[in-house]
Image (cartoon, rainbow, N blue to C red; front, side):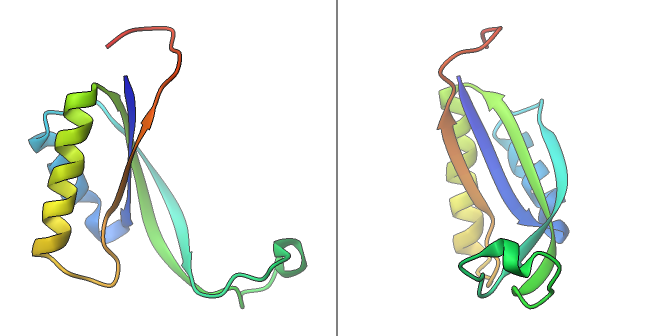
Length: 105
């Protein structure tokens, strides 16, 4: 079992959902988040309430616990999408191993 994670701008959330569908990943979760791009101070606590830590972007994190084959298929589709649609904010995707679980896929 693998944990597939995709990070994107909020505007690309439907694109990632379509990639998951094309990869035959039918079950996934999505979380809205804020991404930051720019300089981050060495001590984040000193800048806790400051807005000077960089530009903020509305982002989405989509993830699925899936098989090795489906995760690899989705990762390939994300890579192809990024090549065909160059941008300063490409979709980022990662595959992580799941060492233990309460169920099997």
